[in-house]
Length: 134
Image 1 (tube, rainbow, N blue to C red):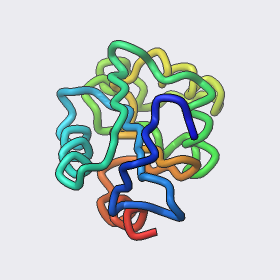
Image 2 (spheres, one colour):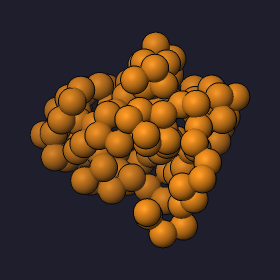
Image 3 (cartoon, helix red, strand yellow):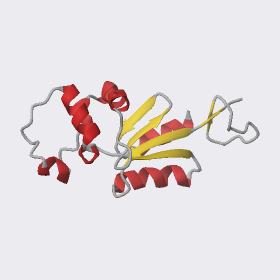
Image 4 (spheres, rainbow, N blue to C red):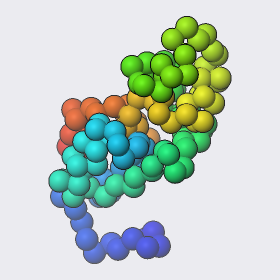
């Protein structure tokens, strides 16, 4: 048994006996981040919210999402911050983009949601539902 976790409660949202837990990276003012928090809360899924304005995502965490989707998928080119920084014509290496995204969380397409080794970018209810059905 894992310390701090009770084995007497089993959620209906289990996968091979494991309770579904998600980690949501985002900012509170993001509508899509709030949508993700509400989605999992309504289904009584344990969530760990990381406010990127208080604790920026590490390069390692961003790489995890970039490995699946590519660095370009992480960048919110429609964000106000993207325009403010004049990045429309920026040609940066993937590593430079990851560093920029870690330093400037408002450049990220949010939320970043992780369930164990599975990740998704943005408000993707279809993927979230599939995690619950697994």
